[in-house]
Length: 426
Image (cartoon, rainbow, N blue to C red; front, top):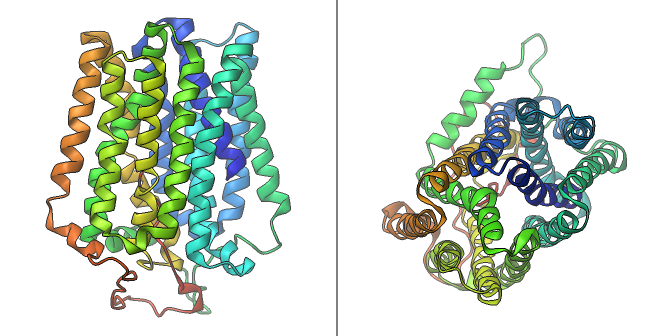
């Protein structure tokens, strides 16, 4: 996860900058982000039953290899003067279509890896979150430096190399037997459940969880705004302000480093604090301030300070969600339920860059930044008034409230051990 996520974060700086400087169009920059994230979300949602059926290990290494091939083709075709915009969009779509199932497969393997390693599940999921935050710290800094020193195509080559290395690690280095399918074997002479039946089971489970659905809607909106600022608004601001691609990397790294600190503190102390207050305070810090400081055209030092403060707040979001949603998803349904939940929460990400690019082209950068900050603030503030959030658990120091067992149509087995629900915030 560390290798592949770091490569993705490098690409998140290199690819938008490559499109922006070669085309000069914020709209086309947003279009490229749309073409990557739409297949990511769609394929991640649809491959959940397949991950449960054939096992996450096989899905992970094959999709990482496909991502590496597509990422390496971009600089190769550009060097041969064969990289037209339609070809670039097709390659970016292939990268997104491969990344979605690959990311899902790695998430699904975390509980099994924790069990085999004798590590408490809470600690394993905490380490996963810290790994993601560290990748968000190192990747943008490396990406910004690579783009500034060697050009954006070098960053894309690094991304391809990371995917290839990740494929090798998953395919060859994991203990034998790790990452196999966890679905119950059908009785002798009876066919196993079909794809659409497994898909429907995951959808039915998710539909019966009001808190999860409320989280998905709110986080879906904030993820759309996050995608817009990361893929379009920050590159346009960096170009217009004269700070260049290095500034993008510094902002991402400042936010990522502070998020690591926030995640670690949350892992230690969040269970002693009121979850609802911690959760929405984290969103208050993580959202609107980033948009406003860029709209004010502040100097680089205050910008980095605000992004660091936002990262610190963001570091508390996913650990709190993980604690609240602990033990809600049975192991045998983990792939399909996580796939649906993540895909719905990330459904706005493909549109984020597209909308931001079109809006900047129409009205300019500053009005879009102000509108984005206001929307972020209203979304997170108004959502906190809904009654579903009372299920988060109220009093400090209490453990996660366990739910009574759900009625299922199939008998559960030892493979049906429970795991924490997947992260929601991008």
